[in-house]
Image (cartoon, rainbow, N blue to C red; front, side, top):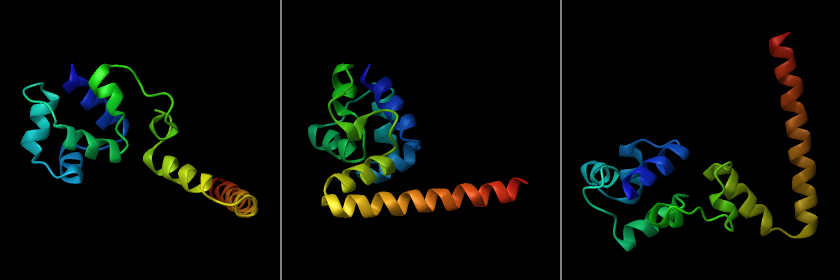
Length: 117
């Protein structure tokens, strides 16, 4: 069961077995063994998986950690990091970032319309 959930989390994060293994410092064969339920990750390895954005509560228990925004399935690791950084800004910096993001998004929308026309 843990192996299937590790695989689901890896796929949710759009990582290959090799990519995830490299990111947490284990051999690809070790990672494959986890996904096949031949062996299980240690607490240290679970911590490393968590740092990558894996919902370790789900891996171990089958229940998603819905209280941690960084682990919401609809958020990629990149988006989650962006939101975490935003949360640590002052209110004036948040307002400046929001204005900048809006302007860049608008520019991107205009640019995409020009390319498809």
